[in-house]
Amino acid sequence: MATTAHPHIGPAWTMTPGTRPDRYASALTSGANVALVDLEDSVAADAKDTARRGARAFFAQDGGLCILGIRINALATRDGIKDLAALAAYPRKPDLILLPKTESARDIHLLSAVLDTPAYTPDLFALIETPRAIDHLPEILTAPRLSGVVFGSADYSLELGTGTGWEAMRHARHTIANCCAAAGLMAIDTPFFDLHDLDGLIAEARRAKEIGFHGKGAIHPRHLPHITEVFRPTDEEIAEARAVVAAAEQSGDHITSVDGRMRGTPFFARARRLLASIGERPEQPK
Image (tube, rainbow, N blue to C red; front, top):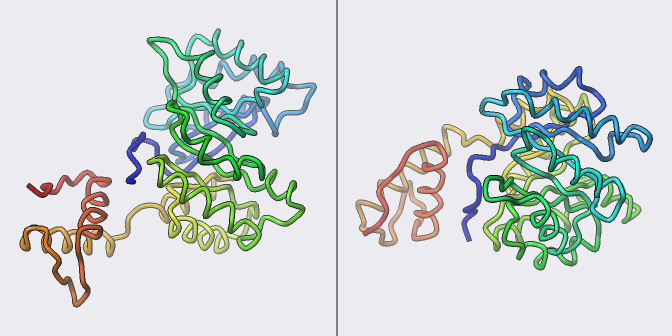
């Protein structure tokens, strides 16, 4: 199934601690497509109330084309309940909410039941970061209000007792990519945790894209342009898509060849989807 939900959400995601209002404005000009203010892991237990109150100012900003979101605390915690109460009272509310420790569709149902109103239905993303969540992922993705999934490798690897390298995270990544594709939802990859290894970041982002992820988190602004570049269609991919669509239209959408390679219905659909993602609207088969 093609990803149908929320194509306006871009690939480069960043997160700012709720206790750092001095960084709020720069988050919006960092080049991120999605800027989150964090109330969870980056905030100490004795600073949760301060972050909760301070985050109101994050959403008072004009995000422009940048989607403004928030990572709240898990709903099974007292701080998670306090977060929901605070969000309901924010004058301007988040465009997107990231729910950590999601392990069932019920978590998403509860989140939407508390926050949704006729005038407010934010994008809801599940942070998948436990082995239980991976096991229950197909059920989680049945939640009708879910927009997509973000992979959290740090907590997942902690529970596995492994590192966060590609091989250790391979099963989780492939499960997330496959299940999200089946459900038509977005999958956003975990951040790359080495601040200075840009080659490693690019290589990991490319591998994530190859298996079906639609974007990646960044732990530093310097990572954002590289993530954007990886997930943007290349000139070669665009040229190939145009050639495939032209061949499809000429053949009446029958199997044909393009540059010596067989192309048929799945290739036509993928090429049309790529061109649509950059604003080109090739004619659909009649």
